[in-house]
Image (cartoon, rainbow, N blue to C red):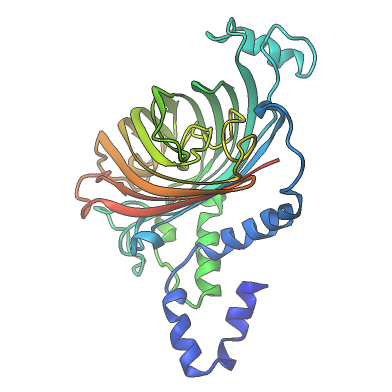
Length: 376
C-alpha cells in the first residue's frame, strides 16, 4: 500500500512535495524489503516483554537482512539483496534422545565436536534473492567489459553447533540463477513503482542454471573482556571457512572486533553470504536475554578476505555460453558499523567497502547492510 500511495498519488502532490521525494524516486529495490520486514516484525513488538527462559537455547531468532548500494550512493554491480532467516531453538548434544529427529541426531554425532557436552545445536532456514547489474543500466546493448546482469534466488538450510566460545555452521544452498530467479522482474517493478527509469539490459543476463552450494564457516571468540565497571567491554571474533558449488567456490578468512555497552552474546555482524547466520544469542549474558539492562550499543569493524575459484555472476554459466568477465581471484570486504539492542530486538547497520571483483572494474564498491533480528 505504501508503494501504491507514492505512485498513484504523485499527480496530486504539490511541487514542493514532489521535489522532496525526487531523491527517493531515483533509488530502487529497497522499499519492498523494508515494507516486508515491517509487516513481519512490528506485530512481534507486543510480545517482546514475554518472560525469559533459563537458557539461550530455549529461544528462536528471526532475522531480516537487506543490502543495497543505495547506501554507497551508487547504482551498479552488487546492487540489491534481501534474505529472511529463522534460527531454531537449540536441542541438546547428540547423545540426548528426544527433542530432535533421529536423522539429525545421527548427523550431529558425526561432527568433530560431538563429544563436547557443553554444546547445543540449532537449525537455520533461509530464503533470499540477490541482484547484480553492470555500471550502465541505460543501454540494451551487451557490455562485454562490464559485469553481466544476473539474479540468484535460493533456499538455504544450515546446522549450527555452538556455545559462547564458538559457532560452527554447515549450510546447503539450492536455488536458481538466471531469468527464473525473477531478479529482472523485481528490479523493474520497483523502478516502475518509484517512477525511476527502467533498466534496459536484462536480455543479456546470465542464463538459467540450477545452483548448489555447500558452505562451512567457523567463528570463535578469542577475547572477551570488560573495560571498567560500567558495562563497557570488547571482544575479538575471527572466522574462517570454505564454500563449494557451481554458484560460488572460495575459501575465506577474517575477523571482527567489537566495543560497546552491554555487548551482545552472539558472533558479531552478519552480511548476506553463505553460512553467516551469526546474530542469534548463545548466552544469557547479553542484553536480549538475562542481563540486568535490556539495552546495548556496539561499534564494530571487520574484514573478510576471499580466494575465489568460481563466481557464476562473473564467470557466466557453467555449461553454456553466456556473458562473462575475467574475475579477480582475491577479493576483500572491509566493514564497520553499529548495532543497537532493545529488549529482544537487535538492529545493525554495516557499511561495506568491497574491493574490485573483476578486471576492468572502475574501482571498488560501497554498499550498506541492515539486519533486524528478533529473539523469541
